[in-house]
Structure formats: structure tokens, C-alpha cells
Length: 294
Image (cartoon, rainbow, N blue to C red; front, side, top):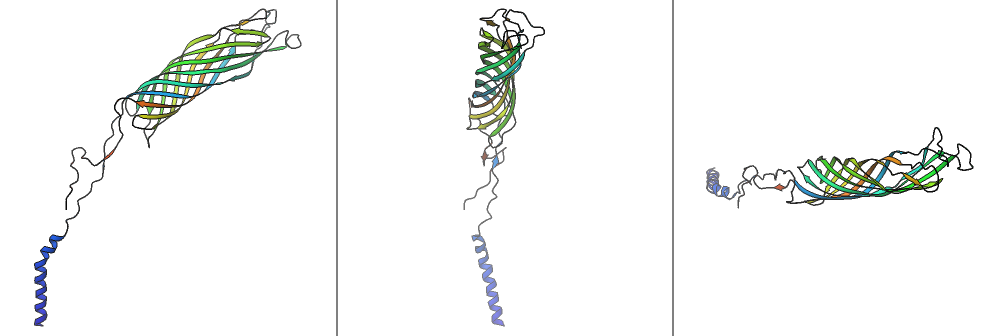
């Protein structure tokens, strides 16, 4: 019994002697690692250049003629009857260039100069007149018309960018400006032949737009969009008849618009603006995490 007590006492003395040394060999708890700080994003602003190409699906509304149906002697029928037939309009190639300013992440504006290439204007009118077909009265004559119509336009546009997700920014916009519509080579083939001098008209124009842009790089954005462009009303010069009497010097008039589908690029000038970045640097005056060397 005395021997067991002595051994127990010796063990306790050993633990008491070596305990502080063992505790000194243990590593302190690791420091707390703070989550990376998301630096606040800055508003993007500055000048940019833009260019777009695409296809314009032309829309001709309220197409009408000033032609009063007459017979070959120049005597009008009363009342004249005029019916439009076989109308078709071709598409245009579209190109736009411009310069703009990104006001902030939500608003931007630009001024553009654009061109709609000449499209094929084709239509026909039927009217009652003597001398057509087998002759007699109330026999319908048919005239067919061909021309080329092109437009040069300048617009001032404003856009609202609706936020950016994964580098994609949807937007809506509107624009106002001027459109110079030109009709070239208007001819009339039917009961005789006629031709009109080329004509141009400067109109008020307006546009509505929508689409989305993609971040290609810090400076370059690709743009895919739709634009409805209204180019106003137009009236041709009078058609001069070449081989009939009593020529009415017919004129054509219509409202012109285009549904444009465009692909373009915008290049930011000046300093490139980076978006939100991940950083472990101190933010808002808060010190970074303490790092201990072991």
C-alpha cells in the first residue's frame, strides 16, 4: 500500500513538472480569415464610337395615286375607279455610324448618320378606260410602275440600359431626326409608257429601339438590336406620258417606314472602366486580417 501511494505521488509530480513544457509546444489557434471584399462599382461614363450594319424590311403604307382615269382622248370617266394591284417592296441594306456619350451605367445618348440602300418599288393600278383589251367602255387598263427608293437619315438617340447580367445588358431607346427620301427611275408601263424625273424629300423621322449589348472587352461592346424607323411621307414627281394624249402626269405618294435588324459595335474612348472586382485590400478604412508567422 505504501509502495502504490509513492508511485502515484511520483506520477503527479511528473505531470506538474512537464505540463507547462507540453502546453508551450501547442500552436495557437489560427487567425480568422475574412471573406474577400467586393469593391464598390463605379459609374461608367465617357465618349464612344459606334457602327452598325443590318437589313431593313421596308414598309409602305397609304400608297395612292393622283391619277384620274382617262380615255385615250383625255376624257375622264365619272366617277373614276382606281384599284391598286400586285404591290411588292424589296428590302434594304442598312449601315449606321455615330458618336455617343455614356452618361452613367443607366443612360447614354448618341448621334448617328445612316443609309438605307435603294429597294425595288413595284406596284400596279387598274382603271376603267376605253381602248384597253378588246375595246369598249368600262374595260380595265392596267399600268405597272417600277422605281428605286433609298434614304439617308440622321438621328439623335437616347437609351436606357436596364442592368447587366453576366456581361449582357438589355436596353430600350428612342430617336428623332431627319430623313432624306429619294425616288429614282420611276417608270409607268401599260397603256402607253411614262417616266418621272427623280425626286427627293426631306422629312421628320423618328425611331424606337430595343436590344442587348455584350461585353467583348473592357472597351468593346457588341450590340444586337431592332429598330422601327419612320421616315415620313413621300410624293413622286409627275409621270410624263410618251405616247398618249391627255396625260394626267400621275404622281405616287406613300408613307415609308422600315423594320431594321442590326448588328454593331461600340468602342469606349478614354480610360477603360472596370466593373466590380474581388479584392482582399482594406475597404472603408477597416484593417485587413492579422497574419501570423509560425
